[in-house]
Image (cartoon, rainbow, N blue to C red; front, side):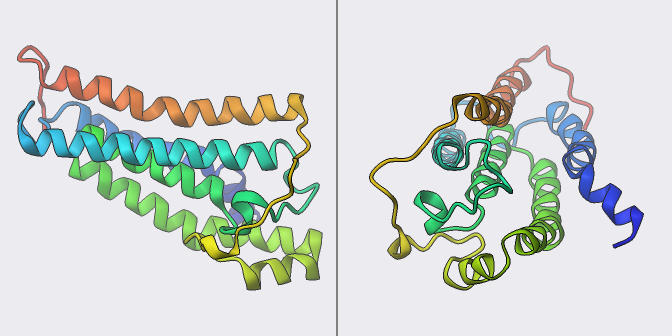
Length: 201
């Protein structure tokens, strides 16, 4: 793989944030799609919170299992028994909830492009690395567990799981950043509804 693609993979989070930042600026300084308090606004906010809680729960559940053991142990139980990338699924849902809260087509379009980029380039690259580390065991895992769409019938888990509190704490801090984004989006949306807030777009 070329150095350019290695660099892009290494800084994938930074690149995603850099791409979405202009979309966020446009969203924050434009009017919300729906009037505050209207039925459309209420329904949109309901879906925002529902998707947010689902995504946060998904990330927390996956974090309890993976907890600092990435690339050390092949985790195939709990959320990883029904989906190979539950952390990504949780992050995608949280990002989508931010789109609902912001009520911005520009942000949703930009976020959708980032999701497509991750799903078609980043995730396959990560899975290729895991295949190199875990070999045939990971190949069998890929054959039996879907990449993104959960397959509940495949769920299985041990009665207990071992937690490394130090590593788990690091993972939870990372999750907290994700979880904070939709809350910030909701705050900005409340500000956008104020008559004194500037709308440039």
